[in-house]
Image 1 (tube, rainbow, N blue to C red):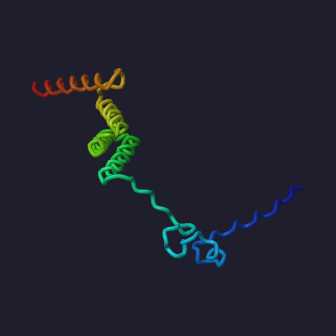
Image 2 (tube, rainbow, N blue to C red):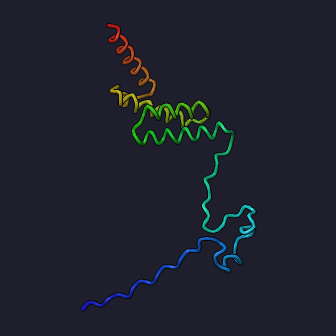
Image 3 (cartoon, rainbow, N blue to C red):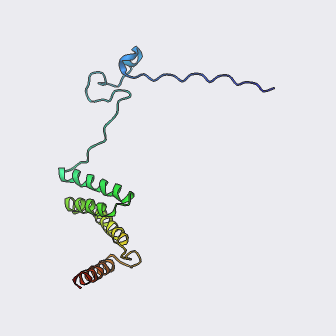
Length: 140
Protein backbone atom coordinates (compact mmCIF):
# COMPACT_ATOMS: atom_id res chain seq x y z
CA UNK A 1 0.00 0.00 0.00
CA UNK A 2 1.00 3.53 -0.68
CA UNK A 3 1.65 5.79 2.26
CA UNK A 4 0.15 9.21 2.06
CA UNK A 5 2.52 12.06 2.58
CA UNK A 6 1.64 14.62 5.19
CA UNK A 7 -0.07 17.76 3.96
CA UNK A 8 2.38 20.57 3.35
CA UNK A 9 2.51 23.15 6.07
CA UNK A 10 0.93 26.47 5.12
CA UNK A 11 3.30 29.19 4.03
CA UNK A 12 3.76 32.06 6.42
CA UNK A 13 1.77 35.11 5.46
CA UNK A 14 3.72 38.18 4.47
CA UNK A 15 3.05 41.33 6.41
CA UNK A 16 1.53 43.95 4.14
CA UNK A 17 2.76 47.00 6.03
CA UNK A 18 5.00 47.93 8.93
CA UNK A 19 1.98 48.78 11.09
CA UNK A 20 0.59 45.23 11.10
CA UNK A 21 2.83 43.79 13.82
CA UNK A 22 4.54 45.26 16.87
CA UNK A 23 7.79 43.46 15.98
CA UNK A 24 7.91 45.23 12.60
CA UNK A 25 7.41 48.58 14.33
CA UNK A 26 10.31 47.94 16.68
CA UNK A 27 12.74 46.61 14.05
CA UNK A 28 12.45 48.97 11.11
CA UNK A 29 15.52 50.58 9.61
CA UNK A 30 16.22 54.04 10.99
CA UNK A 31 13.77 56.57 9.62
CA UNK A 32 11.47 54.07 7.87
CA UNK A 33 8.46 54.89 10.01
CA UNK A 34 9.19 58.60 10.09
CA UNK A 35 9.30 59.05 6.32
CA UNK A 36 12.90 60.20 6.19
CA UNK A 37 13.67 58.52 2.91
CA UNK A 38 14.13 54.89 3.92
CA UNK A 39 11.92 52.42 2.08
CA UNK A 40 9.12 50.72 3.95
CA UNK A 41 9.22 46.89 3.94
CA UNK A 42 7.38 45.66 0.87
CA UNK A 43 7.38 49.10 -0.75
CA UNK A 44 8.00 49.30 -4.49
CA UNK A 45 11.10 51.26 -5.36
CA UNK A 46 10.69 53.35 -8.53
CA UNK A 47 13.40 53.00 -11.19
CA UNK A 48 16.18 55.52 -10.93
CA UNK A 49 15.97 58.44 -13.32
CA UNK A 50 18.91 58.74 -15.70
CA UNK A 51 21.51 61.21 -14.46
CA UNK A 52 22.39 64.19 -16.55
CA UNK A 53 20.56 66.90 -18.44
CA UNK A 54 16.92 66.41 -19.54
CA UNK A 55 18.12 65.79 -23.11
CA UNK A 56 19.98 62.72 -21.85
CA UNK A 57 16.82 61.31 -20.25
CA UNK A 58 14.94 61.84 -23.49
CA UNK A 59 17.77 60.19 -25.46
CA UNK A 60 17.61 57.17 -23.16
CA UNK A 61 13.84 56.94 -23.70
CA UNK A 62 14.21 57.20 -27.49
CA UNK A 63 16.89 54.50 -27.42
CA UNK A 64 14.60 52.23 -25.38
CA UNK A 65 11.80 52.76 -27.91
CA UNK A 66 14.25 51.93 -30.72
CA UNK A 67 15.30 48.72 -28.99
CA UNK A 68 11.66 47.69 -28.55
CA UNK A 69 10.90 48.47 -32.20
CA UNK A 70 13.89 46.40 -33.35
CA UNK A 71 12.75 43.42 -31.29
CA UNK A 72 9.28 43.73 -32.82
CA UNK A 73 10.69 43.93 -36.37
CA UNK A 74 9.51 47.53 -36.88
CA UNK A 75 12.79 48.66 -38.43
CA UNK A 76 11.63 51.99 -39.88
CA UNK A 77 10.28 52.99 -36.48
CA UNK A 78 13.57 51.90 -34.88
CA UNK A 79 15.50 54.08 -37.36
CA UNK A 80 13.44 57.10 -36.33
CA UNK A 81 13.89 56.42 -32.61
CA UNK A 82 17.65 55.78 -32.83
CA UNK A 83 18.07 58.87 -35.02
CA UNK A 84 16.28 60.94 -32.36
CA UNK A 85 18.42 59.43 -29.58
CA UNK A 86 21.58 60.09 -31.59
CA UNK A 87 20.53 63.69 -32.25
CA UNK A 88 19.85 64.25 -28.53
CA UNK A 89 23.07 62.57 -27.38
CA UNK A 90 25.60 62.81 -30.23
CA UNK A 91 28.43 61.44 -28.06
CA UNK A 92 26.72 58.04 -27.71
CA UNK A 93 28.56 55.82 -30.19
CA UNK A 94 26.48 52.76 -29.30
CA UNK A 95 23.29 54.51 -30.41
CA UNK A 96 24.94 55.46 -33.70
CA UNK A 97 25.83 51.80 -34.21
CA UNK A 98 22.26 50.77 -33.40
CA UNK A 99 21.02 53.33 -35.92
CA UNK A 100 23.21 51.77 -38.59
CA UNK A 101 21.95 48.27 -37.78
CA UNK A 102 18.34 49.50 -37.86
CA UNK A 103 18.99 51.12 -41.26
CA UNK A 104 20.49 47.89 -42.60
CA UNK A 105 17.50 45.88 -41.39
CA UNK A 106 15.04 48.42 -42.85
CA UNK A 107 16.81 48.33 -46.23
CA UNK A 108 16.82 44.52 -46.21
CA UNK A 109 13.08 44.61 -45.49
CA UNK A 110 12.70 46.83 -48.57
CA UNK A 111 14.49 44.21 -50.67
CA UNK A 112 17.89 45.91 -50.88
CA UNK A 113 20.50 43.20 -50.12
CA UNK A 114 22.80 45.23 -47.87
CA UNK A 115 23.59 42.63 -45.21
CA UNK A 116 25.87 40.79 -47.64
CA UNK A 117 28.17 43.79 -47.99
CA UNK A 118 31.43 44.27 -46.13
CA UNK A 119 30.83 47.77 -44.77
CA UNK A 120 28.16 50.29 -43.92
CA UNK A 121 29.66 52.67 -46.49
CA UNK A 122 29.15 50.03 -49.22
CA UNK A 123 25.56 49.60 -48.01
CA UNK A 124 24.94 53.34 -48.32
CA UNK A 125 26.29 53.26 -51.87
CA UNK A 126 24.03 50.35 -52.82
CA UNK A 127 20.98 52.02 -51.28
CA UNK A 128 21.72 55.16 -53.28
CA UNK A 129 21.96 53.08 -56.47
CA UNK A 130 18.59 51.46 -55.73
CA UNK A 131 17.03 54.86 -55.05
CA UNK A 132 18.40 56.27 -58.31
CA UNK A 133 17.05 53.30 -60.24
CA UNK A 134 13.68 53.76 -58.55
CA UNK A 135 13.62 57.44 -59.44
CA UNK A 136 14.58 56.68 -63.05
CA UNK A 137 11.86 54.04 -63.30
CA UNK A 138 9.26 56.50 -62.02
CA UNK A 139 10.38 59.07 -64.58
CA UNK A 140 9.71 56.70 -67.47
